[in-house]
Image (cartoon, rainbow, N blue to C red; front, side, top):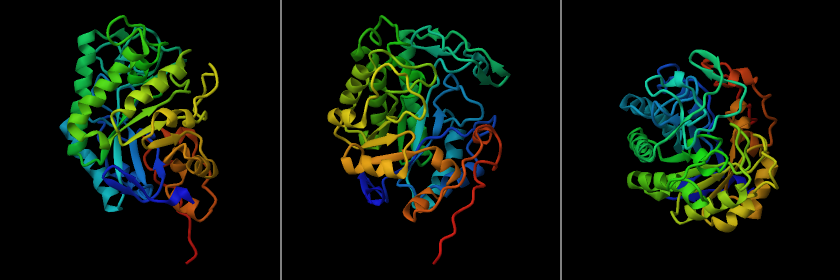
Length: 363
C-alpha cells in the first residue's frame, strides 16, 4: 500500500505516509510547560512518518485554551526538549505547530493584555468558552492596529527560533480552525480597510509575512501551513471561501514549503456555503507536498494517495486511542474503542492519554 511507502520531505526521509495530526490535549498544566507525560504520549506515536505537535501559543496574548503548552519563553523551549528527544530516540520526526487563538480567547487568559485581539471587532457566536475562571461568554475582540499586526509577525518568528532551540525538525503555522491567521484570511472576520483587509490578496498578507519571517529561521523546506477551507469551527465560513483559499494555496506554492496541510474532510463540521473544496482542487494550484486531514479511514487515505491528490494523510482521533495506529493499519488489526471526549482534554493525567492498550502481535 502507498500509505506505508517512504516519502522524502525536504531533508528528511519519512518512514511512511501517515501523519499524527495536531491534537490539543491539555496536559501541560497551568505552567504551560511540556512534561514527561507528554514525552511518553508522543514517543508512543513516533512510528508515524511525521508527528505534528499540539498547537502551542506563540505569546501570552495568543493563549486561549486551558493547560495547553507554550513556546514563548526559554523555559518552555527547554522543556520541549523532553518531547523532541523522546521522539528522536524512537527514530521519529516532529514539527511544532505555532498558534495564536485570536478572538477565540478571553481576557482571563491574558489579563495584562486585556481583550482578545482579532483583525476586526467581530464577536465569535458561540455558547461559551472554558477559561481559567470557568465558563464565560465570548467577548467582542479588539481590532489590532496595523503596527500591532507586524509585531505579531515577529512573535511568530521568535517562537520559531525557540522551536529550533527545542530540537524540533520543523514548524507548522496554524492558519486554520478560526484562530488568528484564519480570521485574517476570511472575509467573515476580516473587515479591515488597511493593507491586511479588503481583498483576498490583502487578507493573505499576514500569513505570507509570517512565512517570510519564519523562513529566516528555518528555511522554507522545514515549514508547513495548515488551512481549513471547509470548516465551521469557531464560527467560521465565508461566502468567498473557495476563491480565498485556492488563492492562498497558490501564493504559498511560491515559497516551496515542506507541505501544505489541508483539512479537506468534513468530520470537524462544514459551513455548507457551497460544495466542499477538495484536495484535487488544491493540488491543481499547489504542486508541492500535500497533507489531507479530517475524518480519514485507512481505506479513504489510501485512495487519496493512489489518486495523487495527497502525499501524506494526517489522522487525529484514531491516534488518540491507538498509539500503535501504524502497526494496526499494517496488520489490519481492530482499533481500540474511542476514548470518552471528557478524557480527551484537560489535565486528566494518563487517563485517556497514554493508557491505551498496544495490540499484541503473533510472532
